[in-house]
Length: 345
Image (tube, rainbow, N blue to C red; front, top):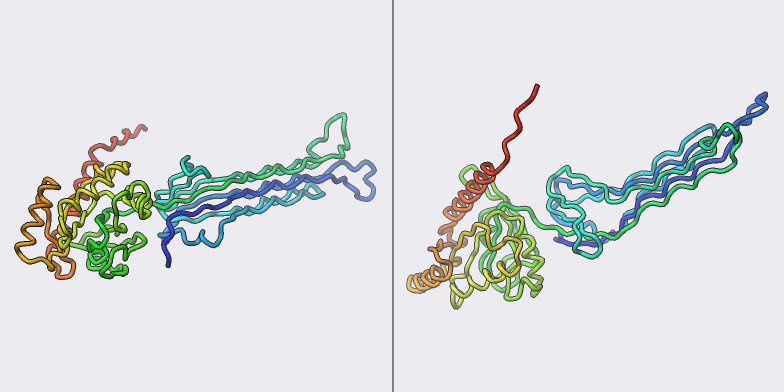
Protein backbone atom coordinates (compact mmCIF):
# COMPACT_ATOMS: atom_id res chain seq x y z
CA UNK A 1 0.00 0.00 0.00
CA UNK A 2 1.37 3.40 -0.96
CA UNK A 3 1.64 6.11 1.67
CA UNK A 4 -0.22 9.37 1.07
CA UNK A 5 -0.29 12.04 3.75
CA UNK A 6 -2.17 14.86 2.00
CA UNK A 7 -5.23 15.02 -0.24
CA UNK A 8 -7.65 17.68 -1.48
CA UNK A 9 -11.29 16.63 -1.75
CA UNK A 10 -14.59 18.24 -2.73
CA UNK A 11 -17.60 17.64 -0.50
CA UNK A 12 -21.23 18.58 -1.07
CA UNK A 13 -24.24 17.88 1.11
CA UNK A 14 -27.56 16.92 -0.44
CA UNK A 15 -30.28 19.34 -1.46
CA UNK A 16 -33.57 19.19 0.38
CA UNK A 17 -36.47 17.59 -1.47
CA UNK A 18 -39.30 19.87 -2.69
CA UNK A 19 -42.70 19.84 -1.04
CA UNK A 20 -45.78 18.52 -2.83
CA UNK A 21 -48.97 20.26 -3.95
CA UNK A 22 -51.78 17.73 -3.60
CA UNK A 23 -55.49 17.57 -2.59
CA UNK A 24 -57.72 14.81 -1.31
CA UNK A 25 -59.82 13.30 -4.08
CA UNK A 26 -61.76 10.50 -2.38
CA UNK A 27 -65.30 9.69 -3.48
CA UNK A 28 -68.08 11.34 -1.48
CA UNK A 29 -65.71 13.93 0.02
CA UNK A 30 -66.95 17.13 -1.53
CA UNK A 31 -64.37 19.58 -0.20
CA UNK A 32 -61.14 17.57 0.00
CA UNK A 33 -58.41 19.63 1.64
CA UNK A 34 -54.67 19.83 0.84
CA UNK A 35 -52.55 16.83 1.73
CA UNK A 36 -49.19 17.54 0.10
CA UNK A 37 -46.28 16.19 2.16
CA UNK A 38 -42.97 17.89 2.99
CA UNK A 39 -39.74 17.09 1.17
CA UNK A 40 -36.99 15.13 2.91
CA UNK A 41 -33.82 16.74 4.23
CA UNK A 42 -30.65 16.33 2.19
CA UNK A 43 -27.89 14.03 3.41
CA UNK A 44 -24.97 15.38 5.47
CA UNK A 45 -21.25 14.96 4.83
CA UNK A 46 -19.36 13.52 7.81
CA UNK A 47 -15.74 12.78 8.51
CA UNK A 48 -14.99 9.85 10.80
CA UNK A 49 -11.80 8.58 12.39
CA UNK A 50 -11.59 4.79 12.02
CA UNK A 51 -9.20 2.03 12.99
CA UNK A 52 -7.15 0.08 10.48
CA UNK A 53 -6.08 2.99 8.26
CA UNK A 54 -2.65 4.63 8.23
CA UNK A 55 -2.69 6.49 4.91
CA UNK A 56 -4.94 8.73 2.79
CA UNK A 57 -4.38 6.67 -0.37
CA UNK A 58 -8.16 6.20 -0.80
CA UNK A 59 -8.47 9.89 -1.68
CA UNK A 60 -5.94 9.83 -4.50
CA UNK A 61 -8.38 8.36 -7.02
CA UNK A 62 -11.62 9.72 -5.64
CA UNK A 63 -11.80 13.41 -4.81
CA UNK A 64 -15.55 14.12 -4.95
CA UNK A 65 -17.98 13.12 -2.20
CA UNK A 66 -21.65 14.05 -2.50
CA UNK A 67 -24.51 13.16 -0.18
CA UNK A 68 -27.87 12.17 -1.67
CA UNK A 69 -30.74 14.60 -2.16
CA UNK A 70 -33.85 14.40 -0.03
CA UNK A 71 -36.87 12.65 -1.56
CA UNK A 72 -39.83 14.63 -2.89
CA UNK A 73 -42.92 15.04 -0.75
CA UNK A 74 -45.99 13.19 -2.00
CA UNK A 75 -49.77 13.23 -1.60
CA UNK A 76 -51.66 11.73 1.33
CA UNK A 77 -49.34 13.69 3.63
CA UNK A 78 -46.40 11.44 2.75
CA UNK A 79 -43.15 13.16 3.66
CA UNK A 80 -40.00 12.51 1.63
CA UNK A 81 -37.21 10.40 3.07
CA UNK A 82 -33.93 11.96 4.20
CA UNK A 83 -31.05 11.63 1.75
CA UNK A 84 -28.20 9.23 2.54
CA UNK A 85 -25.14 10.74 4.23
CA UNK A 86 -21.63 10.67 2.77
CA UNK A 87 -18.91 9.58 5.21
CA UNK A 88 -15.18 10.18 4.74
CA UNK A 89 -13.16 7.64 6.72
CA UNK A 90 -9.69 8.77 7.76
CA UNK A 91 -6.91 7.42 10.01
CA UNK A 92 -6.16 8.84 13.43
CA UNK A 93 -3.98 11.95 13.21
CA UNK A 94 -5.76 13.50 10.21
CA UNK A 95 -6.29 17.24 10.17
CA UNK A 96 -9.08 18.81 8.12
CA UNK A 97 -8.15 22.22 6.71
CA UNK A 98 -10.09 24.70 4.63
CA UNK A 99 -9.14 25.31 1.02
CA UNK A 100 -6.57 27.96 2.00
CA UNK A 101 -4.55 25.22 3.72
CA UNK A 102 -4.26 27.19 6.98
CA UNK A 103 -7.65 27.31 8.72
CA UNK A 104 -8.10 24.20 10.87
CA UNK A 105 -11.62 22.76 10.72
CA UNK A 106 -11.10 19.54 12.67
CA UNK A 107 -8.30 17.48 14.19
CA UNK A 108 -9.18 13.78 14.16
CA UNK A 109 -6.98 12.24 16.84
CA UNK A 110 -9.12 9.46 18.35
CA UNK A 111 -10.77 6.45 16.77
CA UNK A 112 -14.54 6.93 16.76
CA UNK A 113 -14.33 10.72 16.55
CA UNK A 114 -16.91 12.06 14.11
CA UNK A 115 -17.68 15.54 12.80
CA UNK A 116 -20.14 17.00 10.29
CA UNK A 117 -18.42 18.93 7.51
CA UNK A 118 -21.50 19.98 5.51
CA UNK A 119 -25.15 20.01 6.60
CA UNK A 120 -27.83 18.87 4.20
CA UNK A 121 -30.46 21.32 2.98
CA UNK A 122 -33.88 21.34 4.65
CA UNK A 123 -36.78 19.87 2.74
CA UNK A 124 -39.51 22.15 1.38
CA UNK A 125 -42.96 22.35 2.95
CA UNK A 126 -45.92 20.80 1.14
CA UNK A 127 -49.11 22.75 0.57
CA UNK A 128 -50.75 21.19 3.65
CA UNK A 129 -48.33 23.25 5.78
CA UNK A 130 -49.72 26.54 4.41
CA UNK A 131 -53.37 25.85 5.29
CA UNK A 132 -54.92 28.69 7.32
CA UNK A 133 -58.40 29.69 8.39
CA UNK A 134 -58.63 32.06 5.44
CA UNK A 135 -56.75 29.98 2.88
CA UNK A 136 -58.25 26.50 2.99
CA UNK A 137 -56.78 25.35 -0.33
CA UNK A 138 -53.22 26.65 -0.80
CA UNK A 139 -51.78 25.79 -4.18
CA UNK A 140 -48.09 26.33 -3.56
CA UNK A 141 -45.24 24.46 -1.86
CA UNK A 142 -41.62 25.23 -1.02
CA UNK A 143 -38.64 23.93 -2.96
CA UNK A 144 -35.94 22.31 -0.87
CA UNK A 145 -32.91 24.31 0.26
CA UNK A 146 -29.60 23.69 -1.46
CA UNK A 147 -26.84 21.80 0.32
CA UNK A 148 -23.43 23.15 1.25
CA UNK A 149 -20.29 22.59 -0.80
CA UNK A 150 -16.61 23.16 -0.14
CA UNK A 151 -13.08 21.97 -0.88
CA UNK A 152 -11.15 20.67 2.10
CA UNK A 153 -7.57 19.53 2.55
CA UNK A 154 -6.87 16.34 4.50
CA UNK A 155 -3.42 16.26 6.05
CA UNK A 156 -2.16 13.24 7.97
CA UNK A 157 0.30 13.56 10.83
CA UNK A 158 1.32 10.15 12.11
CA UNK A 159 0.54 9.44 15.74
CA UNK A 160 3.44 7.52 17.28
CA UNK A 161 5.01 7.29 20.71
CA UNK A 162 8.56 7.72 19.42
CA UNK A 163 10.09 8.95 16.18
CA UNK A 164 13.40 8.27 14.45
CA UNK A 165 15.11 11.37 13.08
CA UNK A 166 18.46 11.97 11.44
CA UNK A 167 20.18 12.68 8.16
CA UNK A 168 19.63 10.41 5.15
CA UNK A 169 21.34 7.01 5.38
CA UNK A 170 21.71 7.23 9.16
CA UNK A 171 20.33 3.71 9.66
CA UNK A 172 16.77 4.60 10.71
CA UNK A 173 15.03 2.06 8.47
CA UNK A 174 17.45 -0.69 9.51
CA UNK A 175 16.72 0.06 13.16
CA UNK A 176 12.95 0.01 12.55
CA UNK A 177 13.19 -3.32 10.72
CA UNK A 178 15.30 -4.78 13.55
CA UNK A 179 13.02 -3.86 16.45
CA UNK A 180 9.59 -4.23 14.76
CA UNK A 181 7.84 -6.40 12.20
CA UNK A 182 7.85 -3.54 9.68
CA UNK A 183 9.64 -4.14 6.40
CA UNK A 184 10.86 -0.78 5.09
CA UNK A 185 13.06 -0.54 2.02
CA UNK A 186 16.73 -0.68 3.03
CA UNK A 187 19.63 0.18 0.73
CA UNK A 188 23.08 1.75 0.97
CA UNK A 189 22.22 5.14 -0.50
CA UNK A 190 20.53 8.33 0.77
CA UNK A 191 16.76 8.86 0.50
CA UNK A 192 15.96 5.16 0.36
CA UNK A 193 12.95 5.94 2.56
CA UNK A 194 10.52 8.23 0.75
CA UNK A 195 7.50 7.80 3.04
CA UNK A 196 7.15 7.65 6.82
CA UNK A 197 6.67 4.19 8.27
CA UNK A 198 5.26 2.78 11.49
CA UNK A 199 6.08 -0.28 13.57
CA UNK A 200 5.13 -1.67 16.97
CA UNK A 201 8.06 -2.31 19.32
CA UNK A 202 7.75 -5.08 21.90
CA UNK A 203 10.44 -4.87 24.57
CA UNK A 204 10.48 -6.11 28.17
CA UNK A 205 6.79 -7.03 27.91
CA UNK A 206 5.97 -3.45 26.93
CA UNK A 207 4.79 -2.01 23.63
CA UNK A 208 5.04 1.35 21.91
CA UNK A 209 4.69 2.66 18.36
CA UNK A 210 7.85 3.78 16.55
CA UNK A 211 7.82 5.99 13.45
CA UNK A 212 10.58 6.11 10.83
CA UNK A 213 10.75 9.64 9.41
CA UNK A 214 12.55 10.06 6.05
CA UNK A 215 15.96 11.70 6.30
CA UNK A 216 16.13 15.45 6.79
CA UNK A 217 18.49 17.71 4.90
CA UNK A 218 19.52 21.34 5.24
CA UNK A 219 16.56 23.61 4.50
CA UNK A 220 13.99 20.92 5.34
CA UNK A 221 11.89 23.38 7.38
CA UNK A 222 11.44 25.44 4.18
CA UNK A 223 10.33 22.44 2.16
CA UNK A 224 13.66 21.36 0.71
CA UNK A 225 13.41 17.64 -0.03
CA UNK A 226 9.77 17.68 1.14
CA UNK A 227 11.21 18.11 4.59
CA UNK A 228 8.39 20.29 5.93
CA UNK A 229 5.92 17.49 5.27
CA UNK A 230 8.19 14.95 6.95
CA UNK A 231 8.70 17.20 9.96
CA UNK A 232 4.92 17.44 10.40
CA UNK A 233 4.86 13.75 11.33
CA UNK A 234 7.35 14.38 14.15
CA UNK A 235 4.90 16.78 15.83
CA UNK A 236 2.81 13.92 17.20
CA UNK A 237 5.75 11.93 18.61
CA UNK A 238 6.42 12.15 22.32
CA UNK A 239 10.09 11.10 22.22
CA UNK A 240 12.75 11.43 19.51
CA UNK A 241 15.57 8.97 18.89
CA UNK A 242 18.16 10.95 16.99
CA UNK A 243 20.48 8.68 15.01
CA UNK A 244 23.79 10.17 13.92
CA UNK A 245 25.72 8.12 11.37
CA UNK A 246 29.05 7.04 12.81
CA UNK A 247 30.62 6.77 9.34
CA UNK A 248 29.81 10.41 8.53
CA UNK A 249 32.58 12.96 8.16
CA UNK A 250 31.80 14.77 11.43
CA UNK A 251 29.18 13.43 13.85
CA UNK A 252 28.88 16.74 15.71
CA UNK A 253 28.10 18.76 12.58
CA UNK A 254 25.57 16.15 11.43
CA UNK A 255 23.79 16.37 14.79
CA UNK A 256 23.68 20.17 14.77
CA UNK A 257 22.29 20.29 11.23
CA UNK A 258 19.24 18.24 12.17
CA UNK A 259 18.75 20.19 15.41
CA UNK A 260 18.74 23.47 13.47
CA UNK A 261 15.99 22.16 11.19
CA UNK A 262 13.89 21.03 14.15
CA UNK A 263 14.23 24.42 15.84
CA UNK A 264 13.51 26.35 12.64
CA UNK A 265 10.37 24.33 11.92
CA UNK A 266 8.85 25.16 15.31
CA UNK A 267 5.83 23.31 16.62
CA UNK A 268 7.70 22.43 19.81
CA UNK A 269 9.96 19.91 18.07
CA UNK A 270 13.10 21.25 19.71
CA UNK A 271 11.53 20.83 23.18
CA UNK A 272 10.71 17.14 22.83
CA UNK A 273 12.72 14.63 24.88
CA UNK A 274 15.61 13.42 22.74
CA UNK A 275 17.83 10.36 22.90
CA UNK A 276 21.06 10.70 20.91
CA UNK A 277 22.77 7.62 19.50
CA UNK A 278 25.79 7.06 17.28
CA UNK A 279 24.59 4.55 14.68
CA UNK A 280 26.44 2.05 12.47
CA UNK A 281 28.96 1.45 15.25
CA UNK A 282 29.85 -1.95 13.80
CA UNK A 283 31.53 -0.21 10.85
CA UNK A 284 33.87 1.87 13.07
CA UNK A 285 37.29 1.00 14.40
CA UNK A 286 37.92 1.79 18.09
CA UNK A 287 39.81 5.02 17.38
CA UNK A 288 37.17 6.42 15.01
CA UNK A 289 34.38 5.44 17.40
CA UNK A 290 36.07 7.29 20.26
CA UNK A 291 36.63 10.37 18.10
CA UNK A 292 33.06 10.51 16.78
CA UNK A 293 31.61 10.01 20.25
CA UNK A 294 33.70 12.91 21.56
CA UNK A 295 32.48 15.16 18.72
CA UNK A 296 28.89 14.14 19.34
CA UNK A 297 29.19 14.75 23.08
CA UNK A 298 30.46 18.30 22.49
CA UNK A 299 27.64 19.03 20.05
CA UNK A 300 24.79 17.47 22.06
CA UNK A 301 26.05 18.40 25.51
CA UNK A 302 25.67 14.84 26.79
CA UNK A 303 27.10 11.39 26.22
CA UNK A 304 25.51 9.62 23.27
CA UNK A 305 24.54 5.97 23.13
CA UNK A 306 26.37 3.61 20.79
CA UNK A 307 24.10 1.72 18.44
CA UNK A 308 24.36 -0.89 15.72
CA UNK A 309 21.17 -2.37 14.30
CA UNK A 310 23.22 -4.81 12.23
CA UNK A 311 25.06 -6.39 15.18
CA UNK A 312 22.45 -5.62 17.84
CA UNK A 313 24.82 -3.54 19.94
CA UNK A 314 22.96 -1.03 22.09
CA UNK A 315 19.53 -1.84 20.58
CA UNK A 316 17.87 -3.00 23.81
CA UNK A 317 19.44 -0.14 25.74
CA UNK A 318 17.98 2.35 23.27
CA UNK A 319 14.52 0.78 23.50
CA UNK A 320 14.63 0.89 27.29
CA UNK A 321 15.73 4.53 27.19
CA UNK A 322 12.74 5.35 24.96
CA UNK A 323 10.37 3.54 27.30
CA UNK A 324 11.81 5.38 30.30
CA UNK A 325 11.16 8.72 28.61
CA UNK A 326 7.62 7.66 27.67
CA UNK A 327 6.91 6.63 31.27
CA UNK A 328 8.29 9.93 32.57
CA UNK A 329 6.11 11.86 30.12
CA UNK A 330 3.01 9.89 31.11
CA UNK A 331 3.71 10.54 34.79
CA UNK A 332 4.13 14.27 34.15
CA UNK A 333 0.85 14.39 32.23
CA UNK A 334 -0.93 12.61 35.05
CA UNK A 335 0.36 15.15 37.59
CA UNK A 336 -0.72 18.15 35.53
CA UNK A 337 -4.16 16.70 34.74
CA UNK A 338 -6.98 18.36 36.63
CA UNK A 339 -8.50 16.15 39.35
CA UNK A 340 -12.03 14.96 38.71
CA UNK A 341 -14.80 16.88 40.47
CA UNK A 342 -16.21 15.08 43.54
CA UNK A 343 -19.47 13.26 42.98
CA UNK A 344 -22.54 15.08 44.21
CA UNK A 345 -25.61 13.06 45.19
